[in-house]
Amino acid sequence: MTMHRYNVAWQNWPGAPGLSVFFTDPAAGNPDPAPLRTFWNTLAGLLPTGLTVQVPASGDLVEEATGQLSGTWSATPVPAVVTGSGTGVYAGNAGAVIHWLTGDVVNGRRVRGRTFIVPLIGSGFESNGSLSSATITALTSAATTLLGSSTWHPVAWARPFKGTVKNPVTRVGSKHAVTGFRIPDLAVSLRSRRI
Image (cartoon, rainbow, N blue to C red):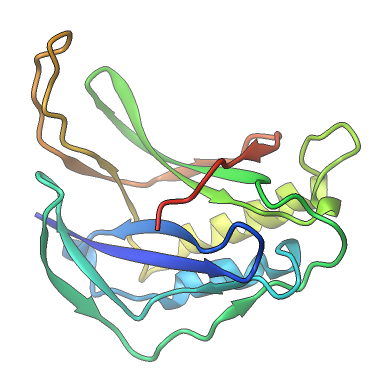
């Protein structure tokens, strides 16, 4: 079984480029980047002015069991670039995280995905360093709308594991339907992004 992979590219801030990765289930429908673009556009006011987020109109098909590429997908039209409109100071490595929840357990752990929203503008935080209530409201609204879209079928991927000397169990990868989300009321920090 395959997954659609969306590599969402971040640009134009100290520490750029960045990448946020999402997966959807081809068995549930054709790829549709529009709901993902709406998600990011809802958050534009929390992103520093000039920072850009590009949702792709094409991407890879990834085999869930192995992680190997098996083809490509494409959709039209190309989503418009989302440009941050938040003003004020910010730290390039500080922001928030959304945990994408599933009802499944693999190897004794709940399967979940994560999306880091980093960086956030300084006013996105309270004076004690936690997220502001307005930030949590905006993140909740964006995540609710994304999961509520009839054309967006997100999955979290439990990656394959080859096993080690201490843990010789080998497992294949598997995809799991995202059924909810959680937004911790705390600041998160990223040391780097994979590109």
